[in-house]
Length: 78
Image: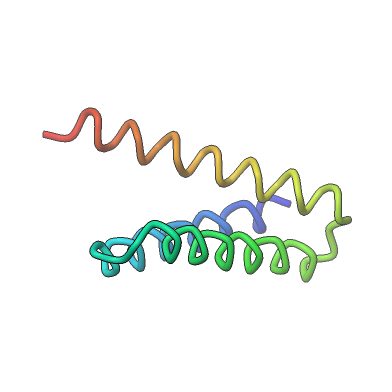
């Protein structure tokens, strides 16, 4: 599960890069982009033989940690 967690954090970092590149898109397109990345992260967790429940919780945990760290980064950047 640790490997899945790290790979999902890489996926969310890639999401951050894609979101930055699409800075002028409408909110609906950013929401769709988020849903696509969330689905890919979930499928990746299933691919590593996690149960659906474990995959869901791991994906939600990595999303929460990603957005928490992103918020802290932007709040305390120099």
